[in-house]
Length: 150
Image 1 (cartoon, rainbow, N blue to C red):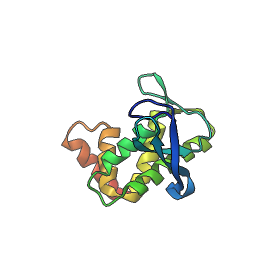
Image 2: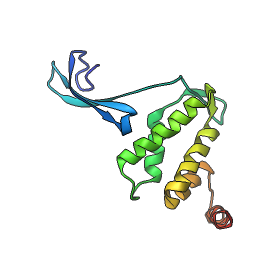
Image 3: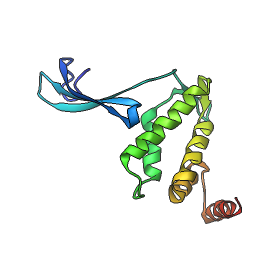
Image 4: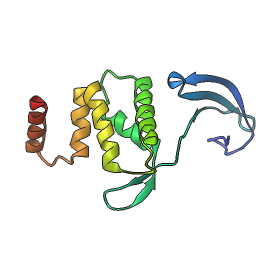
């Protein structure tokens, strides 16, 4: 593993332990060249996923981008980082197990919406406002009205 500080490949694992309820392994590493310490995570990847964007581009699935968007929706909400990691892992596993190697960004957004709707209503509305591309207050009002009806 290359050191993120000095780019040396001479690093050593100091500690390993299960993380994310056993879905990954957290490793504390030390760089023998510069002495820096850093953490890496090892996860099972069932298949390579490609995301078909709304503009027609195809990009590799980016777990960190998914995690960032969920963290933004959950900012200042009573959800800790371990819960976010479990959510991201759950969504990624579900997408990988569906069998398709190419997914639409819309399908990924729908999975996130399903999870957030159950987890935290404020985060759900925050995510929906970006996902559904709300333009003004009427869009929020219509969306909130649809929540009351369901």
